[in-house]
Image (cartoon, rainbow over the protein chains, first blue to last red):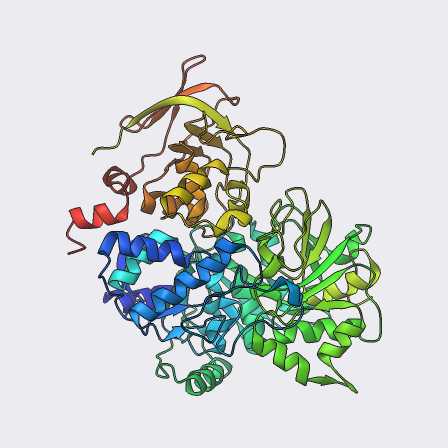
Length: 456
Length: 179
């Protein structure tokens, strides 16, 4: 067997080839297709238009529908889009539909009069898709996961090939279970050492994007390896894989180790999803386009300034930049570990700017309301420090969204955010500015009213 | 129906790194592109996220007067929203000439057949918004009509027959990949 990268090994296996090389186009069998409320209705529209009104999806147990983007809004079209997913799930017998409401005959309507803070979802709701997929046992080593969302690459943390596609490609997959993919060349990142205190996984990926440029991995796979990987939690790996797209990458991918297997076993068994999987083993001798070594112990807290994720600075060097708002949430920075890092810094203190917290999933809400830091729960600590915490887990203001989205930047202002993207107008108003940082750096900055290093 | 390989019209000129939020701001993603009325509406908001005064689609109009966009590098970076090439196509634009494209946007252009994404093989002349250009896909060139400057374009290669077919579904049917 020729030496291949992780991405090549998976696409080789799933295309039935003996060998694949970068640049080749291959038909790949898809293990899981995920879509959500923003791209799902269009994907379903393509599927019906092309395969006919009576058509059936290729495998109803491999299609995962996760409403998560525009949920807690009075926008009637956005509410309707959740209903379109429900009708499709019912018609096709799709098992993994994480509906906002429990009534399968009902219609989703957000009630603004109840306020934005208390939960308005039912027992099946799963929250932000990229966090919900692993929580609910849909990410497995060695598989191919496609999603109608650019941050689908998050699942590369679990040693699988995961990438974002458009509605038309997704409609094709819905009908056939297959997709034509080009084998991407690989950039390999070898991580050494351990992250120092105050430095988070987000800093690792901001460092890498700053180093190679925010189009530096366009069309390419970003493969991680080295001893440093073992010291990263699954949450850390998800944060790093999540932002592959912010370097233009096709996917980010990690080797499989005991932590991966333990996580996937636990989640797939608890959720009753497919629990068998076959990891791909990393071959560091496989040829790659470029290889980089990064000593994690030398990294410092970073920010990416407006207007792109490659605009990297050390937090300590830009403390003169004032902020109007702080935000923690999303598939990048809305995990339990992200809020814990935030809470440790703001505990017993008060934020100086309006600060919004949106957990990625209902499970994160539960964990934060249960976990204690000293006498109080993490949730209480956050609220007492002035963070506006909502139980309504969703993408919320990370991508702007409808004007009543929780935390949206509705006027020209500067927000420091634990999210993933900071192109002009990303979080709302066209002339607003977003600074990307780790949850710890966002917390320190929220306390200071300007960019701050969490170690200071 | 064979797609025309020669497109002539006024160009709309933008810089580097025009991301999908600038092409179609997220607040319009409540619109579903396969619903005809909402497809048309997406066209009205094409490039509505561009900072500055210049409008790709004039206020109150349904369509753009610009059939070609001339852009810098990394056009279409960011999200996988297919609404982006669809909004441009629905507005009446047919070609984007960019120094480089982000991957998912490029693929969505071809899969939908909405937009022809081409890259120049050399430097672009100093074009201003409103200047007439001609794109010739058979000869892989762009002609700047003001002074006749010719810019070579990289061949579309395997993507051209998909665009000619009108997107991946027609292409797949023609080649027996779909029943």
